[in-house]
Image (cartoon, rainbow, N blue to C red; front, side, top):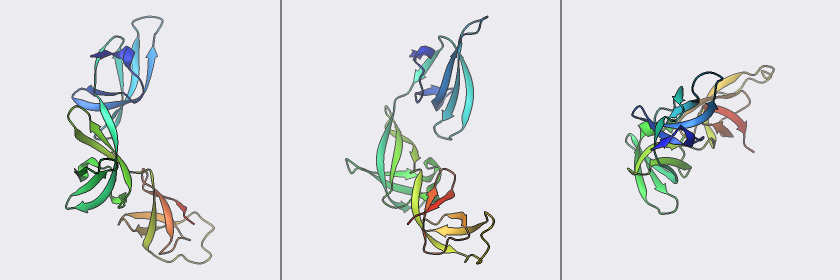
Length: 187
C-alpha cells in the first residue's frame, strides 16, 4: 500500500472499486488544519474525469498497468481482432473497450492498456489522427466558400463526419479521432 506522498501524474489506482488514473494533483498545506491532496481522477473504463480530495497520509491502492502496441487486423461480429506488434500474439477485444471503433482502420497500430497482474485488457486507445478517403459526399456548390460551412461525408472506415464544402468524393483527409472531426486535407 502506498500513501498520498507517492501520488504522481499517470499513476493508476483502485479508488472506490474502480480503476482510475491520476491526471493532475496538488499538495495543499493550508494555514489552518491538516494538509490534503487535491486530484483529478480519470476512470480508465469510462473516460470520465472527477475531482477528489485525499487527506494527507491517506493509503491508496496502486495498480500496475501496461501499455502494449497492437495492430488492428479485422472486425468480427461485435468485436475486433488485434495482433501484438512484437510477439505476433492475437487477441479478440469487445467493442465496449474501444471508445470510437468507427474510426479503426486495418493495420492501424493502437495502444491497449492491460491490467498487469490480471493480464486483462482495460481499454483500447486508437490513434489520435487517421488518414481516410472520402467515399461519399454531396458535391459542393461553386462560390459558396465565404462561410465556414460544413457538409456530411462518409469515410472509408464507414464513419460519417462533417467536412468543408471544397472536399469531394475520393479526397484523402486527416481526421481527429478524439473529436470525430475533419482536421485537414492530405496532399
